[in-house]
Length: 390
Image (tube, rainbow, N blue to C red; front, side):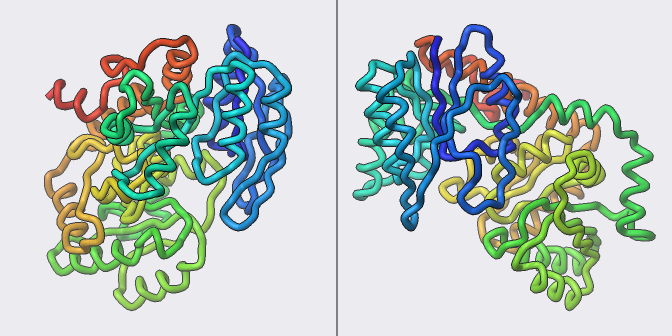
């Protein structure tokens, strides 16, 4: 089966699923994309030597991205299937889809899909764009529900989740011993290492709303709950957050940027709870993959699809978006309800192993390529599955 996968740029965090597809003996895969991200801040996928790659450079005119070679290649090369990034704002993807269809290929859009119901002009354009594809490969069930409400056939809406390299995470986890994690907590917070430890690993930007987390910690101190916070990352808000932490006399360790996966794994595993007051994204996959539950907000129209991996009381919890008091109450509830740490760790691993991993993505993508309808019994919504188990 001849398959082309066209993206603007293949980031390092896509490596596991792309390599899995490239290794499939029943597929002949060609990857089309630029070799560097337009901003130059994201590490590229370092491809295996046998991966077939065609460079299709991107050219940006403001927010609009052009990628001439993508459509040109698809027009003059024959494929059975073409997977494209489902971004309606980029002419390259419209042209690529039309070129592929002219050559008789079956077209699939890989996309977040709908993040919220839309009734205006933008929503109509998005729906027209999505109808260029035979199938949509979506990150989550929330998007599928909206798409179904927009008149798309359920069997065309394949939920394939998202993933990091779960296999690599398992290998690193097996190398870590509990004493090592306790020593790390002591190194970071000295005689205060026995307090619950929160972590957020992300770029320090205003949109992350980490100021809310510091305010919530200050409020919780007044209620008798002292917390430590580990911030892994750097960014334009670092100075403001450092000042706020100092003014409130909070135990916050600014670790700085960390790109070493074994170190990042240990920092995450040593922590009790990941808190992402803004959108959570792949931070959830990283945290759950190392057994640490995730707390983020419940305004799903302003979230990333990965929130669906959070099952309250099992793999984390949710608070009211923008509400500092509710953020504090939810953190307090998590720790005062005393969830068994090993049980929570097992739930986090289970969530990743069952749904949010490259092997499962590969399997669900193959269903679409093989012309099978989306199977919601096989790719069940995690929250529904957990409800059945309870």
